[in-house]
Length: 467
Image (cartoon, rainbow, N blue to C red; front, side):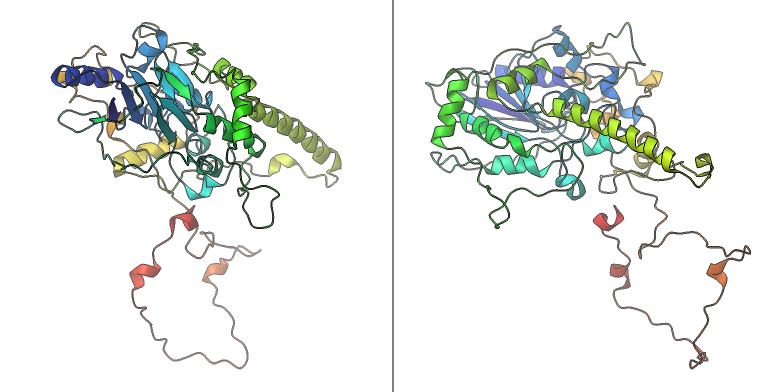
């Protein structure tokens, strides 16, 4: 079986499929499967563009929308995982995976499927320690913080994958591919020959062990941003092993009527981009996908998005009740409007994100503090012809070379003290007043300055501390 592997796609599906066609003409035969390893950018419309964590000037529609609308169809079965430059609102509709377009399948937050007897697993996003132990609490419309945290990997997904035993499989050599972006004269695509089962069906199938694990770990779903740990064999949990048993797998098979074929049930859930009728004011909506609804009903598990919507509604109602109680219990007679509630000076930019250059960092800061619901306006000189030939690939949008990760302009020093001056009641700056000495102490004639060895080391601030 010939499998093509692509690096970051950045929505350049036309160019990738054209390259595959060229490779097939020059190679021994057609490609059976295409794997895309992140930054797929399944952007359907202008609202999806605003959910990508990149500065507005790097937001380009690219060509995925043509496959979503049905104007084009992927010539080869395509599987992909999410990265850190994605239309997160679109992928969030399919937490357990599903079709984002005909013949293009998303593996979900984490997922395992089979094709021609070959197991294919993956996990979406990037790792950030400060979000790893949180639940999946983000939902549209995102703010400057959640538009980034939503693509950070969570411990629950890693925990599920670790339950995979697969004792019948023998160890095989792992190939590490350091693929580039879709640029001319770059190695952004590689074709591998993979052993497969000739008797296996020529279609995408569910992995029975993975489905059983999803069902077993259903009660571990968390949609809050509270930190929590997965169950361990440490005497604190009644159960810590959620691996699939033979009995549990038989039960799942019966639920699926012994049919593991992934249904071709793609459906359009949002309006598709129309170049002749741009809609810059398109509203962001937290949608429930019929694919996920069908999958959860068949397997008997919870749709994360439905659980999240209920949690947000309950929190909203509780918040209104608490606010009313606070108003009724406020007997001080103070005017609440006198308190400064402006939090615009507080930065929610992720200091762990990667920044390529100063110009990009400045744009990222502007983007991070802007409202995610406001439309992005593309400069007229950035407009490109989507029907460009592959020879024009070298003229690419900046989104293919950006990694929008920002830095923090914090007012807190290394010792955790707030910057600025402190004044006394009479307006005197206390930071300039010398500290009083005890009665038995004497002022030294001259203070000696002690220079610490390896002083540069002590000046470094750890990323987690800065966060």
